[in-house]
Length: 233
Image 1 (tube, rainbow, N blue to C red):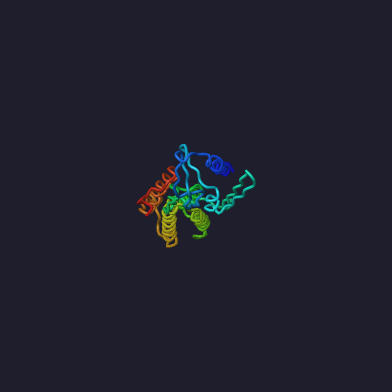
Image 2: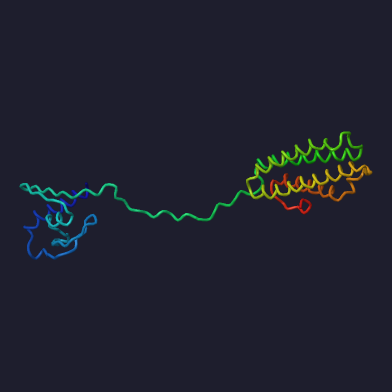
């Protein structure tokens, strides 16, 4: 609105002051006038260091209208297009995938520790049976330990969500499989009525591997991140 009034004052100044100016004080030329993005040729009069444009030419360039009522001049410029705004290109977004979280997730760490505890309990029961004699009833007594460990392993698998979780689960799964092999080996010897010395596990390479892997898995759990261990392969 302020711009419209200023333009009107200039036009009014042209009509009132213009006729009273001496010819030596004024010069007239045709120039390009740009108003709110509209441009066109219009006569420009320069007088006393100021420029004046004909109000009718201004109205024509801007697609506006002008009305005369005595010594009052009403110039109406078209309203700007509603909703028109500068379009700013969106910032370029990085296409790189976010880095996966490092270390073990809280859920997997909890489930993994539970699975390790079940395997440890299974081995302790087997070690006691070797040292003090297997309980009567064949091999059914191991099913409870094996089943509890298998359930814990399944829960750990379901909880794995990070790269470290999945790598850690693979080693945990290897520990379970090795424990299964050791248990089956001892039960097979028992079923064949072969003599099993009380220190049989201490001299068994597979049992030593299970113990070494258990220590490595415990260190990983304490550190909260995956560290490869040859004993778990």
